[in-house]
Picture 1 (cartoon, helix red, strand yellow):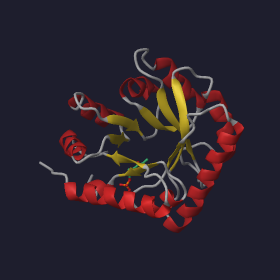
Picture 2 (cartoon, helix red, strand yellow):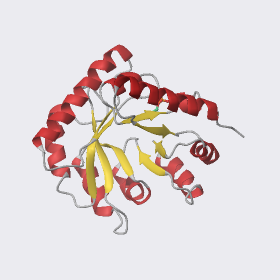
Picture 3 (tube, protein in one colour):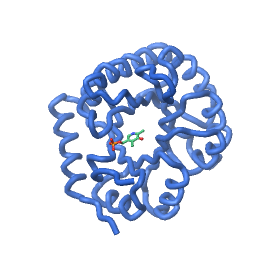
Picture 4 (tube, helix red, strand yellow):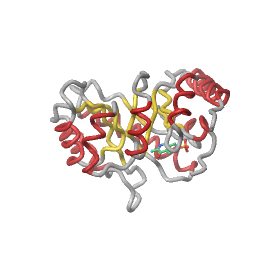
Length: 228
Ligand SMILES: *Cc1c(COP(=O)(O)O)cnc(C)c1O
């Protein structure tokens, strides 16, 4: 049986809010990335004060979501999406960060149950334009956003990225993401929901915060290293 180190979690949350104070900005939402962690660990992390959890693998996530369905956790899907997974994703999640093609967005909208509010989505951007990496090319972001905005059951919230591993380069990538969101907001001034930059992980979240991240996705710094 594994246990969460609540001290780790509290320390990280305190660090995030200190950094935000130093920058004079609003603290970003901490999305706890709980892939490989058990439902029990998620429950303990929830008790330590975390409310938003991010999952990469659908089946693993569905098991945890059903075990924790009496809690008020907000679930975010952050992994690659195959089209045969869209139904379960839009039935069980509140957010999807990894939309990078219209077909997936359309299926999520079509399949979103009527009794749920619109699904919050971010467009995943391949900000370093790496070969064979998920995400839309930055140049194609506006046209994908315009298409997504026509879908009734999803609400476009902003952009997400996973930059190249090199942390010194990440600074530049995060800056490009911020510029891309500003550009999108300028092109689509009627879309008031475009308020999200999902960027920054355990090794680079301070840089992402400096560039205006509104959601940081943290696994290792909250839960310790993943061993599988
Ligand atoms: C695993 C993962 C994270 C968290 O990574 P850490 O380095 O453990 O903080 C964040 N975002 C995505 C998309 C991930 O797959």
